[in-house]
Image (cartoon, rainbow, N blue to C red; front, side):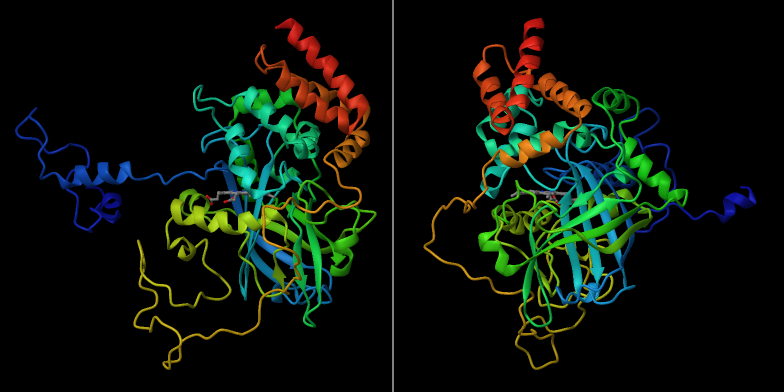
Length: 492
Ligand code: HEM
């Protein structure tokens, strides 16, 4: 052995015993079958078989980084959240970007919304804002989400995404017209995770020290500038470098080029909500900026790569139900469903002690409660009592709700969300279309037509319903799309 070799640590089994041979399986004689006493072999093979955990049912493909959020404006008039209490205050964060429909190993450069899941490690517990790079969404009721995602994922028979399913669902769900217009426009394929905006998308509640509450929407505006790929550029890149977004983010941070976002909020006084022209809790609608101008409140910087992708990215968990005092949910029916769905997914995907992994646990405070044990419990509570009330100095409740109570009326039932004066499924989709430049309109029509034309030849009804929604948004939009689809279907 050389001196170099002598300095190297000894390879061991999981139990710490030295391994004599990591190259040759133990056999009965030379060239004979393997022996069961070769526990080194069995331990390695068994551990390898269990390396994967279930991938996220949506947003499986992603990349993440740690960073810092800094408050740049006094927002104490609106919220009592401690991490927002002072200009200049910094909070550690962890942001995971993702695509939605693709599996874990799918390409980054695809037409799909991008997830923007942000964890603030605050001194009052972790606050998660689990948003997208789009201010709106395809549907407005949580009960439609599994059906919607089934149409985006693989067909039970073909095992592939099918245009028939996608356009059937969207055509029959006219509330999707706004988000679909957004998705097939230029921003539908971002050039990288650094060049996109993030949005909280839902309306959330802020409550101040005096108990008054407000409705807020979050915007994270990229300081790198918005950059997108055309469909052709993306098709090429997805083939050449499936990890393009992930690599770009990691390498930028390694170079010390830390990406930043300017954080803004739109704030609606609670009293405005009932009579606002749009239902302020409808996730398929934005609040036009002329109604509620965004105000700047902070800066987000990403500055540290995770050391271990599995431990810190695959096992990371984000929940829209992770609130801190002064921030709470709105009655948005999508958000209400999400308040259940995420923690449930985490218990299945990562396990009942997922909250206690290093990336997930609070970093600026500690979790204190009487939940114990379960798979992979690490014994962190030691001898402490595990019940409440107790007279051994255990943790006690505050008696102060985290957010304000909201008045409700009427009887229980499967109600549609209330419709306000200007609400319909098409008005904001039409406004977005008319905002696009002529060039962007042409790309939008080409992108949509390229996909709609893939619907099976004997299902013109699906095509007609899909185009009908765009026609209702804007006559010119519908007419141009119809012509483009007719042309492409003629060529097939
Ligand atoms: C009722 C509607 C929705 C349901 C039931 C739902 C459910 C889920 C589930 C089960 C996951 C996987 C969680 C995990 O395994 O850790 C997930 C991930 C995610 N969802 Fe949703 N989702 C909904 C709507 C939305 C909306 C509207 C947005 C954005 C505004 C969104 C953004 C995300 C993001 C960013 C992730 C990835 C989180 C991460 O990086 O770990 N989802 N969703």
